Structures are given as C-alpha cells and as structure tokens.
Image (cartoon, rainbow, N blue to C red; front, side):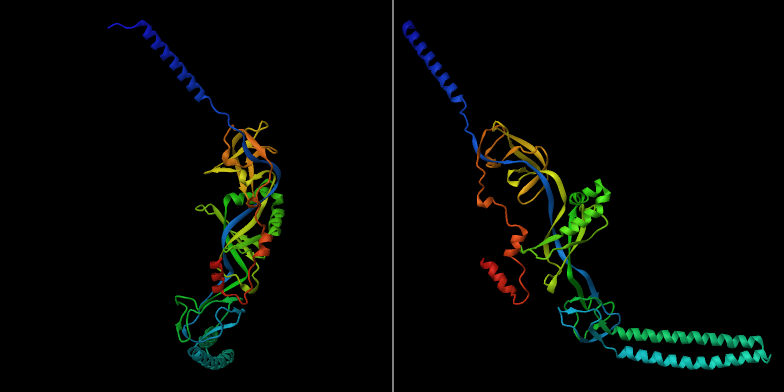
Length: 421
C-alpha cells in the first residue's frame, strides 16, 4: 500500500497544531484565579484588669434541719401546730398520752416517801447506837451493823429520788416541743397513732430557712484561682477573704429569676473530693418571708479574684474546636494568621487569653467563618448588629424580672401564663 507523502505531511501538521492548542488551553485553565479580600470586622486584643466571674449550680437547703422524734412511746392525742407554719423554739407540737407516765411518777414519789420514812428510823437507830457504843453497852460489831444499815438506806433514798426525776422527765417528754426556730413541715403521724423512739419516720421536720443555705461544688481549678493571690503572698489571705465577702454572691433561680438579695460565703469543706475533683462550698442568702424553700436548684455567681493586666478579646472572636481555642490574627498587610491560644476563662461577652497573642494585635471578630490561614481580609467599620450587643446585666434583669410577692400568687395561673408565652 502506497502512502501519499503530501497527505501524510498535512495530517501530521494538523495533529501537531491541535496538540499545541489543547496544551495551551490546559495551561490557561490551570492558572489560579485571584481571590478578593474577605470583608470582616476587626477587633483588638486589649489589656486590662479582669474580674474572674464564675457560676455554679447549687441547691437550697435549710441552715439547720431538725427531725422531730419522740423520746417516749405512746399514742398521739393532740397536734398543736399548723402544718407549714413558722414555729418558735419551745413551742408545743404534739402531745403523747401522759396518763401512763403520770402514774409512774406518782408511784415513784410514793416509793420515795416510803424510803425517806425508813431512812429516818434507821438514822435514829444509828444515833442511839453511837451513844450506846460510847457507854460500852454494845459491841463495836453491833455499831458497825447499824452504821451500814444507815448508809444503805441513804443510798436507797437517793435511788428513789433519781427514779422520781426520771419519771418526771418521761412525763415532760410526752409534750413534744420545737427544738429550733423555723418552718414546720407536714405531720407524718395523725392523732391516735402509736409512736415510739424507733418509729420509721420523724413526727415532722423543722428547717431554719432565714437565712437559707445554698450548697454548690467548686472545681479545683476555680478553687486554685480563688487562692492564687494568697499562695503568692500569704499575708494577703485575710484581705482577699474580706474582699470576696464584700463582693458577695448573686443567685439566679431555675426559671431565670434574679434573686434580689445578695448572699455571703458561709463555709467550705475541709478537703477536695478525689472522685469529683471539687470542694463543697456553702453560702447564705437572706430569705425574708421564707419564700424560698429547701430543694430548689439555682445558679450561683461570684467573683473569684481579679486577673491583673489580662489579655482580653471579644468572645465572638474565639474559634473553639473541641478543646482547642484559636484566634484569627490580622497582620499589617491584612493577611490572616490562625493561632492556637490558651483561654483562662470566659464571660458572656469576653475571653481572657493567657498565651498566643499580644496586646494591641488585631483579630477578626465578625466574619471569622469565612477566613482561612494566609487569606487577605478587608476591614469593615465596627458596627455590630443589635443582636450582638451584650445582654442585660444582673441589675437590668432585676428591674425586669423579680420574685413576686407571696400574697395572691397562683402557681397554676403562673404556669398557664408561661405556657401561653
């Protein structure tokens, strides 16, 4: 088969031209397109003294809880107090049938009278024996026998007197009184019920709830922050305690109601739990009207020291990926560098940074989800929308939502109003 050299040369030239065109197209397609700068809002890393505000979950308890139990056995014949009312120490609560104990007391008194009469006779015999011994009418042995009889009778009288006192105490125990001032609970036994010191339940419970106690767990990191200043300079320990007491505690109830009374530190446990890594702390809050009841859950806010010259950034600028925190730092050339940082603590609007950035560095606050490491940004005027403005302070919340008065409050109507909202 013969090949036309002219046609072959033309075909080869066409293929070479096509390959050259395809190669130039690929090169043009592979050329990267230039990305425009990302519009973002810029913030600054500022340096200032930052109070360390902390918040914990606690529950309310009475400062004193007294289980009222009977000391004697018998049938309840009367209940004096009104369930759920405030009682004073020594106020009668229950009456156990006193008749059997009155009978025991009368018998003990009669036995005592008999013993005293016998003691008188034996004492007279002893005095006579002393005179007869002096006149050598009786022997020493007979005198010693009379002396022993008299001493035994004196002891018997003392025993009878103790029996009278014991019977009187048991009779007094039939009237059960309030051991403390506080609010009495529901009665666990009705009139006519037989009770004893070994009964399964107490007759009732009295709790002292003004002031009321809030108990919460403080983690060991928060505890170390609290004592950091005292560790550096032990002479400042007492001063720091006074500052923490004067700062007080704020309590927010489970429905968001801000309690208007400021609380004070009461006590802390003497050791940190090795299981939870936390220490139990108690605070006291005034409870006028005794509206707050034990068992309620609440959030407790307090200041645990002040971090001086802290590096502070807006909370919106912090990128959090699991336990890793990052900031998008903007350089002089408006290029972004993503840096890992260590966060000491956060508030609702700010975060305190311990390492990774320096004061007065620029950071991305809004638009952070659009930036990548090395990209260019275009700073926008800092005009945050109203939704990004800081939330109301504790004082502002208190003006809009306070604890309602006890009078005229209907739990059902309140629940219905909440449902409608």
